[in-house]
Length: 455
Image (cartoon, rainbow, N blue to C red; front, top):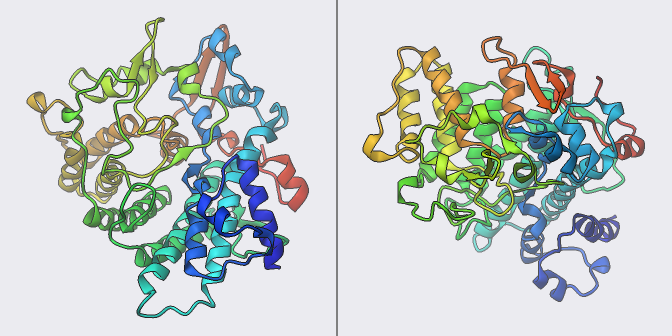
């Protein structure tokens, strides 16, 4: 069975347009006949370029951060992207598999490699001389598997609600390296519990630091764990995970120190507030085709340094987004996101003072220091309003807004009925509409006979 797996792995990689480590290919001339048997082999597998990629392109296109003129809408290269923009129902999508197949393969291609690595670790003796390398490899595989499970849950499953999580359909949870394993959809509860389990084990196994942004350490595992708990509305554990992440990395880049504000990309992937590199798999670049939502842009005051660092002025008087750490949209966690999770969790746990302390640790590095007045609030409710506003502004174009809409729509106070006007046509997406769960690609339905999302 292992030979069969390794015949398939290069095919998955080629389909993604991403190559494995050159050293691996040089060392293993006949990969079809080789089973990874050493920690070096397993480490090389996890160094493949494919592990920098995340899906979530479809939900980023669908969110309300962008607006389009008729001309801009018609310039979108792919029909399914136009369908995401106007929130069509599953049966009406044009060539859906072309984009969703890529997102699905992006996730499960990585999950398959992680399962191979975790399986092959079992017969390797962990001893005093190799335990650090062994644990790092195990923690890395668990981290990437959990990250992709979470990406899939955000895209293809309902929001986590405790009352229905045991019956709502989640995603296929593949934990074995057998490519012929017939995996059905787990529940949302089972999906998130597997994510939590993987990340907890990952955080225990990973080292405290890593040499660069291509490798994840404890702070990154705890950050992703905090993100997952937040999406579950488990605020006590989200707070604990965020605190743990900040224990290992609390650095926040001071935007006051960035001088190349007119550059096409003034933020840098080398920033120490990034936990690990992450790039969005996206068919078309809507942030440069459409424009940033005008009402959203107007929330950035002139004292907010992100107004200059995040946006590029276009000839039509609108703005596009340039505030990514990479040439493609960044999807990884940062200390900024962790502070916002901590702030929200504390506000929801009735710790107004603590929530604002966490928020201001971020804000002082995002606003002009000469004019900065720390945020204050008269109540937890007021504090939460401020935090959610800052969360949207800080995490723009990270592939997170759609999931935030899903979870916040449960509360009538924060529920939003989305409206998008393109020319004379008006499109709407009511809060809690079934279309917040994207359709599963038909090729997956045909092959695995799993249940399609209902609309």
